[in-house]
Image (cartoon, one colour):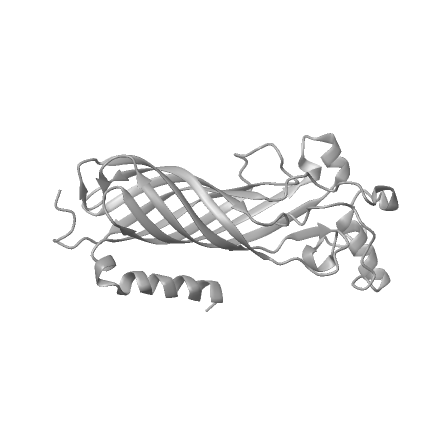
Length: 273
């Protein structure tokens, strides 16, 4: 079992194992899309570039406040060649990455809502939390016209001249809005959009300035050729050294949007409204 899944299961067992929590536990599944804003997409916060899915277990303290443990998975990608920005097209960078996120989130319902009770059958809500995200940006490069397009893990090619590969795990802060509807008995339907501020600027492998290749890493002609292209597909080489490769923002942002379904276990002693 992957260690990320083990962490999620560990905390889920804590939630389930507590008698106080087990009386009002809510389980949910959600699916939808994922997007990102960063150095390759600087102005389209609602652009979806891949699919997303997730699961959560929540504790409903009352009809207004909920604490949840969430696992979210999504895929994001961007390619300068498909941009409507001429400068980006000339730059020619591309990436894709899977996102694995585990987070604790607090929901606040605006109305007195609860899938197993409450006076309202629906409510808008907001949420915020804290968590961690695992990522691994991958770039495409065709070495020669008659060869297949290959994929490379960008962090290992030190595309901005780094001495060490940057970490591929980062703190993340989720926040967003949603809407819940009670369907029947303990079943609920919800939809939400949530952004995440990631405490890294390398979701897309782009952060600082163009730099000379790290020859300690790219120490063969083949590695050097691949690394130079991944760092600068435009082929401008030394003419760009020292100039900005991406934007000046120090953190990337990603987004999950989707529709989900939930089931709430309620004891007879809970929520006597």
